[in-house]
Amino acid sequence: MSKATIKQVAAAAEVSTATVSRVLNESDYVSEEIRERVMAAVNRLNYQPSAIARSLKQDKTFMIGVIIPDISNPYFMGISKGVEDVVGPEGFQLMFCSSDENPEKEKRLLKLLQEKRVDAIMLATSGGNDLMIKQLAESRLPIVLVDRKLDSDEAGQNLDLVAEDNTEGALRLTTRLLQDGHVRIGVVNGPTRSSTGRERYMGVLKAMKEYGLKSEPIVYNGDFSTEDGVRAVRKFISAEKPPTAIISLNNRMSLGVLLEIVRSGLRIPGDMAVASFGEVEAGPLLKESGLYYIDQHPYDMGVKAGEILLRRIRDEEAKPIPVYEIFSNEVNRLS
Image 1: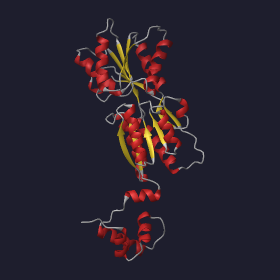
Image 2 (image 1 turned 135 degrees about the vertical axis):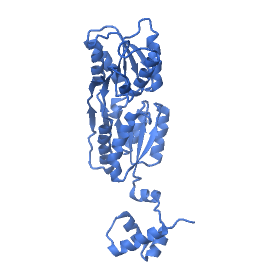
Image 3 (image 1 turned 180 degrees about the vertical axis):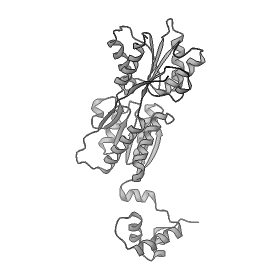
Image 4 (image 1 turned 90 degrees about the horizontal axis):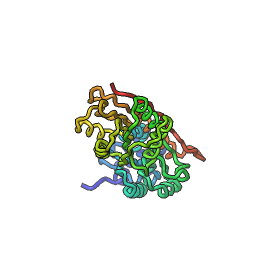
Protein backbone atom coordinates (compact mmCIF):
# COMPACT_ATOMS: atom_id res chain seq x y z
CA MET A 1 0.00 0.00 0.00
CA SER A 2 1.48 3.36 -1.05
CA LYS A 3 1.91 6.17 1.44
CA ALA A 4 -0.64 8.93 1.48
CA THR A 5 0.43 12.31 0.12
CA ILE A 6 -0.36 15.78 1.36
CA LYS A 7 -2.44 16.30 -1.79
CA GLN A 8 -4.61 13.31 -0.90
CA VAL A 9 -5.10 14.66 2.63
CA ALA A 10 -6.10 18.06 1.21
CA ALA A 11 -8.58 16.45 -1.18
CA ALA A 12 -10.11 14.32 1.58
CA ALA A 13 -10.46 17.34 3.86
CA GLU A 14 -11.62 19.58 0.98
CA VAL A 15 -8.94 22.20 1.70
CA SER A 16 -5.73 23.35 0.03
CA THR A 17 -2.34 21.74 0.64
CA ALA A 18 -1.22 25.02 2.21
CA THR A 19 -4.00 24.71 4.78
CA VAL A 20 -2.94 21.15 5.61
CA SER A 21 0.62 22.40 6.08
CA ARG A 22 -0.55 25.21 8.38
CA VAL A 23 -2.49 22.75 10.52
CA LEU A 24 0.34 20.24 10.81
CA ASN A 25 3.02 22.84 11.49
CA GLU A 26 0.78 25.04 13.64
CA SER A 27 2.27 27.93 11.69
CA ASP A 28 -0.86 30.05 11.21
CA TYR A 29 -4.46 30.38 12.38
CA VAL A 30 -7.14 28.08 11.00
CA SER A 31 -10.63 27.59 12.38
CA GLU A 32 -11.30 24.72 14.73
CA GLU A 33 -13.70 23.16 12.22
CA ILE A 34 -11.03 23.15 9.48
CA ARG A 35 -8.39 21.80 11.87
CA GLU A 36 -10.66 18.91 12.87
CA ARG A 37 -11.40 18.08 9.21
CA VAL A 38 -7.69 18.04 8.35
CA MET A 39 -6.71 15.91 11.35
CA ALA A 40 -9.55 13.48 10.62
CA ALA A 41 -8.23 13.07 7.07
CA VAL A 42 -4.66 12.67 8.37
CA ASN A 43 -5.74 9.91 10.74
CA ARG A 44 -8.00 8.19 8.22
CA LEU A 45 -5.28 8.07 5.56
CA ASN A 46 -2.50 7.44 8.10
CA TYR A 47 -0.55 10.31 6.60
CA GLN A 48 3.10 10.62 7.75
CA PRO A 49 4.70 14.00 7.00
CA SER A 50 8.17 13.83 5.47
CA ALA A 51 10.75 14.61 8.15
CA ILE A 52 13.27 15.55 5.46
CA ALA A 53 10.93 17.98 3.75
CA ARG A 54 9.92 19.48 7.08
CA SER A 55 13.54 19.96 8.13
CA LEU A 56 14.41 21.65 4.84
CA LYS A 57 11.47 24.01 5.16
CA GLN A 58 12.12 24.91 8.79
CA ASP A 59 15.91 24.78 8.42
CA LYS A 60 15.96 22.44 11.41
CA THR A 61 16.21 18.68 11.79
CA PHE A 62 15.40 18.71 15.52
CA MET A 63 18.36 16.35 15.97
CA ILE A 64 21.33 16.96 18.28
CA GLY A 65 24.46 14.92 17.70
CA VAL A 66 26.18 13.49 20.78
CA ILE A 67 29.75 12.20 20.48
CA ILE A 68 31.17 10.59 23.62
CA PRO A 69 34.27 8.41 24.05
CA ASP A 70 32.52 5.44 25.64
CA ILE A 71 28.78 4.93 25.20
CA SER A 72 28.79 2.19 27.88
CA ASN A 73 30.28 4.41 30.59
CA PRO A 74 27.61 5.35 33.19
CA TYR A 75 29.27 8.74 33.59
CA PHE A 76 28.66 9.74 29.97
CA MET A 77 25.21 8.19 30.04
CA GLY A 78 24.42 10.37 33.06
CA ILE A 79 25.46 13.45 31.10
CA SER A 80 23.39 12.32 28.10
CA LYS A 81 20.33 11.74 30.30
CA GLY A 82 20.60 15.28 31.63
CA VAL A 83 20.78 16.67 28.10
CA GLU A 84 17.83 14.57 26.94
CA ASP A 85 15.64 15.68 29.84
CA VAL A 86 16.19 19.30 28.82
CA VAL A 87 15.97 19.14 25.03
CA GLY A 88 13.40 16.32 24.72
CA PRO A 89 10.40 18.36 25.90
CA GLU A 90 11.36 20.99 23.31
CA GLY A 91 11.01 18.45 20.48
CA PHE A 92 14.66 17.53 19.96
CA GLN A 93 16.07 14.00 19.65
CA LEU A 94 19.62 12.86 20.39
CA MET A 95 21.77 10.97 17.89
CA PHE A 96 24.36 9.01 19.90
CA CYS A 97 27.85 8.23 18.60
CA SER A 98 30.80 6.59 20.39
CA SER A 99 34.32 7.58 19.34
CA ASP A 100 35.95 4.79 21.39
CA GLU A 101 38.73 7.24 22.35
CA ASN A 102 39.78 7.19 18.68
CA PRO A 103 40.51 10.63 17.14
CA GLU A 104 40.15 9.29 13.58
CA LYS A 105 36.75 7.79 14.33
CA GLU A 106 35.73 11.03 16.03
CA LYS A 107 36.66 12.95 12.88
CA ARG A 108 34.47 10.65 10.77
CA LEU A 109 31.58 11.06 13.21
CA LEU A 110 31.87 14.86 13.16
CA LYS A 111 31.68 14.79 9.35
CA LEU A 112 28.73 12.39 9.47
CA LEU A 113 26.76 14.61 11.86
CA GLN A 114 27.46 17.62 9.69
CA GLU A 115 26.14 15.72 6.67
CA LYS A 116 23.04 14.71 8.66
CA ARG A 117 22.44 18.43 9.25
CA VAL A 118 22.09 18.11 13.02
CA ASP A 119 21.12 21.34 14.74
CA ALA A 120 23.98 21.14 17.26
CA ILE A 121 26.65 18.82 18.64
CA MET A 122 27.59 17.91 22.19
CA LEU A 123 31.15 16.63 22.16
CA ALA A 124 33.44 14.93 24.67
CA THR A 125 36.49 14.97 22.45
CA SER A 126 39.17 12.30 22.26
CA GLY A 127 41.64 14.96 21.13
CA GLY A 128 43.43 15.69 17.90
CA ASN A 129 40.55 17.31 15.99
CA ASP A 130 40.86 20.94 17.04
CA LEU A 131 41.03 22.32 13.49
CA MET A 132 37.92 20.50 12.26
CA ILE A 133 35.94 21.39 15.39
CA LYS A 134 36.95 25.03 15.01
CA GLN A 135 35.89 25.03 11.34
CA LEU A 136 32.51 23.47 12.17
CA ALA A 137 31.90 26.07 14.88
CA GLU A 138 32.85 28.88 12.49
CA SER A 139 30.27 27.51 10.02
CA ARG A 140 27.68 28.36 12.71
CA LEU A 141 27.07 24.78 13.83
CA PRO A 142 26.69 25.04 17.62
CA ILE A 143 29.18 22.81 19.47
CA VAL A 144 29.15 22.42 23.24
CA LEU A 145 32.16 20.70 24.76
CA VAL A 146 31.55 18.49 27.79
CA ASP A 147 34.05 16.94 30.19
CA ARG A 148 37.02 17.72 27.96
CA LYS A 149 38.67 20.79 26.49
CA LEU A 150 40.33 21.10 23.11
CA ASP A 151 44.11 20.73 22.93
CA SER A 152 44.54 24.35 21.91
CA ASP A 153 43.19 27.18 24.05
CA GLU A 154 42.98 29.33 20.91
CA ALA A 155 40.79 26.79 19.11
CA GLY A 156 38.44 26.38 22.05
CA GLN A 157 38.17 29.96 23.24
CA ASN A 158 34.87 30.60 21.43
CA LEU A 159 33.24 27.29 22.36
CA ASP A 160 30.97 26.57 25.31
CA LEU A 161 32.39 24.17 27.89
CA VAL A 162 30.83 22.17 30.71
CA ALA A 163 33.47 20.26 32.66
CA GLU A 164 34.86 19.36 36.05
CA ASP A 165 37.77 20.92 37.92
CA ASN A 166 40.01 17.99 37.08
CA THR A 167 43.23 19.34 38.51
CA GLU A 168 41.74 20.34 41.85
CA GLY A 169 39.77 17.10 42.15
CA ALA A 170 42.85 14.93 41.54
CA LEU A 171 44.83 17.07 43.98
CA ARG A 172 42.26 16.51 46.73
CA LEU A 173 42.10 12.79 46.01
CA THR A 174 45.88 12.37 46.14
CA THR A 175 46.14 14.48 49.28
CA ARG A 176 43.86 12.07 51.14
CA LEU A 177 46.19 9.17 50.32
CA LEU A 178 49.22 11.20 51.37
CA GLN A 179 47.56 12.11 54.64
CA ASP A 180 47.05 8.39 55.28
CA GLY A 181 50.82 7.89 55.02
CA HIS A 182 51.09 6.60 51.44
CA VAL A 183 54.17 7.96 49.70
CA ARG A 184 54.64 5.19 47.12
CA ILE A 185 51.66 5.75 44.86
CA GLY A 186 50.76 4.12 41.56
CA VAL A 187 48.81 6.31 39.14
CA VAL A 188 46.47 4.88 36.50
CA ASN A 189 46.04 7.72 34.05
CA GLY A 190 44.19 8.13 30.78
CA PRO A 191 45.65 9.26 27.45
CA THR A 192 47.52 12.54 27.73
CA ARG A 193 46.02 13.64 24.39
CA SER A 194 42.81 14.33 26.35
CA SER A 195 42.56 17.30 28.67
CA THR A 196 41.21 15.09 31.47
CA GLY A 197 44.30 12.89 31.31
CA ARG A 198 46.65 15.88 31.40
CA GLU A 199 44.83 17.89 34.05
CA ARG A 200 44.21 15.04 36.48
CA TYR A 201 47.83 13.94 36.37
CA MET A 202 48.87 17.56 36.98
CA GLY A 203 46.70 17.48 40.11
CA VAL A 204 48.49 14.35 41.36
CA LEU A 205 51.91 15.89 40.85
CA LYS A 206 50.82 19.15 42.46
CA ALA A 207 49.61 17.33 45.59
CA MET A 208 52.88 15.39 45.89
CA LYS A 209 54.91 18.57 45.45
CA GLU A 210 52.89 20.42 48.08
CA TYR A 211 53.41 17.47 50.41
CA GLY A 212 57.17 17.79 49.98
CA LEU A 213 57.76 14.62 47.95
CA LYS A 214 60.48 14.82 45.32
CA SER A 215 60.02 11.40 43.75
CA GLU A 216 57.44 10.90 41.00
CA PRO A 217 54.76 8.19 41.17
CA ILE A 218 54.72 4.99 39.14
CA VAL A 219 52.46 5.72 36.16
CA TYR A 220 50.44 3.57 33.80
CA ASN A 221 48.89 5.48 30.88
CA GLY A 222 45.81 3.79 29.47
CA ASP A 223 42.73 4.68 27.45
CA PHE A 224 40.14 4.98 30.22
CA SER A 225 39.11 1.33 29.91
CA THR A 226 38.51 -1.41 32.50
CA GLU A 227 41.29 -3.49 30.93
CA ASP A 228 43.74 -0.64 31.54
CA GLY A 229 43.02 -0.82 35.26
CA VAL A 230 43.75 -4.54 35.22
CA ARG A 231 47.03 -4.08 33.35
CA ALA A 232 48.09 -1.24 35.64
CA VAL A 233 47.69 -3.36 38.79
CA ARG A 234 49.72 -6.17 37.22
CA LYS A 235 52.47 -3.66 36.46
CA PHE A 236 52.43 -2.17 39.93
CA ILE A 237 52.47 -5.39 41.96
CA SER A 238 55.33 -6.80 39.87
CA ALA A 239 57.51 -3.75 40.54
CA GLU A 240 60.58 -4.07 42.77
CA LYS A 241 58.91 -1.75 45.27
CA PRO A 242 55.15 -1.96 44.70
CA PRO A 243 53.09 1.07 45.64
CA THR A 244 51.04 0.96 48.82
CA ALA A 245 48.21 2.87 47.16
CA ILE A 246 46.75 3.32 43.70
CA ILE A 247 44.97 6.38 42.41
CA SER A 248 42.91 5.69 39.30
CA LEU A 249 41.88 8.76 37.35
CA ASN A 250 38.75 7.37 35.68
CA ASN A 251 35.85 5.25 36.96
CA ARG A 252 36.15 2.56 34.27
CA MET A 253 39.84 2.07 34.97
CA SER A 254 39.04 2.02 38.70
CA LEU A 255 36.74 -0.96 38.16
CA GLY A 256 39.62 -2.84 36.55
CA VAL A 257 41.89 -1.89 39.45
CA LEU A 258 39.47 -3.28 42.03
CA LEU A 259 38.87 -6.47 40.05
CA GLU A 260 42.57 -7.25 39.64
CA ILE A 261 43.49 -6.46 43.24
CA VAL A 262 40.78 -8.85 44.46
CA ARG A 263 41.83 -11.49 41.89
CA SER A 264 45.41 -11.19 43.10
CA GLY A 265 44.37 -12.06 46.64
CA LEU A 266 45.31 -8.67 48.05
CA ARG A 267 43.22 -6.86 50.64
CA ILE A 268 41.81 -3.37 50.20
CA PRO A 269 42.98 -1.21 51.92
CA GLY A 270 45.22 -3.47 54.05
CA ASP A 271 47.60 -4.43 51.24
CA MET A 272 46.67 -1.76 48.70
CA ALA A 273 44.65 1.40 49.22
CA VAL A 274 42.63 2.71 46.27
CA ALA A 275 41.36 6.14 45.27
CA SER A 276 39.16 6.71 42.21
CA PHE A 277 38.31 9.81 40.20
CA GLY A 278 34.64 8.99 39.97
CA GLU A 279 32.39 6.61 41.83
CA VAL A 280 32.74 2.90 40.99
CA GLU A 281 29.39 1.09 40.86
CA ALA A 282 30.92 -2.12 42.24
CA GLY A 283 32.73 -0.30 45.06
CA PRO A 284 30.01 -0.74 47.71
CA LEU A 285 30.19 -4.53 47.24
CA LEU A 286 33.61 -4.55 48.89
CA LYS A 287 33.53 -4.74 52.67
CA GLU A 288 35.43 -2.04 54.58
CA SER A 289 37.40 -1.07 51.48
CA GLY A 290 38.06 2.48 52.61
CA LEU A 291 37.81 3.41 48.92
CA TYR A 292 38.24 7.13 48.30
CA TYR A 293 36.33 8.55 45.34
CA ILE A 294 35.53 11.87 43.74
CA ASP A 295 31.83 12.68 43.78
CA GLN A 296 30.91 13.60 40.21
CA HIS A 297 27.70 15.22 38.94
CA PRO A 298 27.18 13.98 35.36
CA TYR A 299 23.41 14.52 35.28
CA ASP A 300 23.72 18.15 36.43
CA MET A 301 26.44 18.69 33.85
CA GLY A 302 24.13 17.28 31.19
CA VAL A 303 21.29 19.59 32.24
CA LYS A 304 23.60 22.58 31.93
CA ALA A 305 24.86 21.42 28.54
CA GLY A 306 21.26 20.92 27.36
CA GLU A 307 20.32 24.46 28.38
CA ILE A 308 23.29 25.86 26.46
CA LEU A 309 22.46 23.76 23.40
CA LEU A 310 18.91 25.13 23.28
CA ARG A 311 20.16 28.70 23.58
CA ARG A 312 22.63 28.22 20.73
CA ILE A 313 20.11 26.47 18.45
CA ARG A 314 17.61 29.27 19.03
CA ASP A 315 20.36 31.83 18.42
CA GLU A 316 19.00 33.98 21.21
CA GLU A 317 22.05 36.25 21.51
CA ALA A 318 23.41 38.60 18.84
CA LYS A 319 26.99 38.21 20.11
CA PRO A 320 27.00 35.12 22.32
CA ILE A 321 29.59 34.98 25.06
CA PRO A 322 30.95 31.43 25.50
CA VAL A 323 29.74 29.70 28.66
CA TYR A 324 32.50 28.20 30.79
CA GLU A 325 30.83 26.09 33.49
CA ILE A 326 33.21 24.21 35.81
CA PHE A 327 31.85 21.80 38.42
CA SER A 328 33.82 21.29 41.62
CA ASN A 329 34.12 17.88 43.27
CA GLU A 330 34.43 16.59 46.81
CA VAL A 331 36.24 13.50 48.07
CA ASN A 332 34.14 10.79 49.72
CA ARG A 333 35.10 7.49 51.33
CA LEU A 334 33.33 4.16 51.52
CA SER A 335 33.26 2.60 54.98
